[in-house]
Structures are given as C-alpha cells and as structure tokens.
Image 1 (cartoon, rainbow, N blue to C red):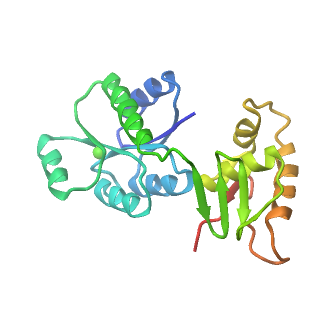
Image 2: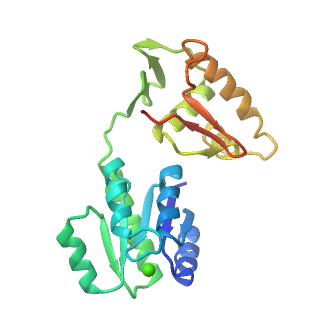
Length: 227
Ligand code: CA
C-alpha cells in the first residue's frame, strides 16, 4: 500500500483529502504544522507528499527544499493563489505538480495517481540496493556483504529488503509481517522479533558493531541511515 503524507494546516481540507485518498486505497498520514510534517517525512519516508505552501512552524518551500536535498519523494504543492504558483515556478523548486486552491478533492486524488505513475516509470528495471557495505539484489533475491553472499531465509531476505529500501523509516511489526507474508495476522507480530534477531546475527560482522537494523522502542524497526 502506498503512503501519502499531507502537510496542511486547514483541518477540513485535510479531512476531505484524507477520506478520498483512503477510499482510493492509500495509507494517509497528516500533519498540521510544517516542522512536525517535515519530521514525519524524515521518519516515515512516504511515497508522496501533498504540501501546503503557507504553514506554521516551517514554510512549505523550506520543507520541499529539504526533501529534495535528501531524496526524490514526489511532491504535490497546494497553493492559495495563482501568484504563489508563479513564485514556485520561478524558484524551480522541484515540486512534481501544483494544485491551486480552491480545488476539488477528486482532482487531488487524480493528480496523486498521475504523479505516482510518472515517478514509478523512472525506476530502473533491475533493483539493486547499495547501502553501507551491503548489496541487496531484489531480482535475484540475494544479499551480499562486502561481496560475500549472506545465507538468509526468504523471510529474512524480505525483511532486509524492505527495511533497507527506505533507511530511517520506521516500520511496526504488523507492517513487517505484511511484507513478509502478504497478509498479517494480529497476534503473530512477535514472530517478527525472532526473524529480526536471526537476521541481525547474520548481518553483524563483529560483536559490538552498530546494528544495521535498529529497534525503535515501542514502535518497531528501521534500517540504519548512512552516516
Ligand atoms: Ca496554509
């Protein structure tokens, strides 16, 4: 399921967009402030951000610039006036699309789908993740550390692959269970802990090295970001 983050300070607008997106099958996160919105982007690494321009705490332009510096999450900007749109284009900010208020919520959903489709097309056919000293080949379902293949079970490989794809993003146990089994059963969440434990043991080179997969207390797990 694709995750959309809405950063917008008008609660009614957020409610409207959220309900349409959820009906369309997206997972939706929302923040009313710019600063907390940016934090949520950092922690959750959503698939797309719907970003208002004028926000309390942190300006939408600053958020977009910071996101661009660190990654290529598609951004759809919400702007209040046409002049603001001009300002954005002038700044060559790197947003993937703009929507000028007022707009219909239906239109937002259509734009989200279009932007995601475009973004997906740019992905390379072969998917290899290089992170820290690991190479993860999602087509061949192999993981190598410093060129040497790690002997992982299918579940361990899937866990590693999902976590390493978005370093820093926190996943709870239920989400991880979903990615490894296709469907999740509540109550089986703790089995993830056992898989993570085995996976960590296989990844770790020497005792005392910082773990590749970090525990986020009370939430779940995330892959360590590169320094
Ligand atoms: Ca606003």
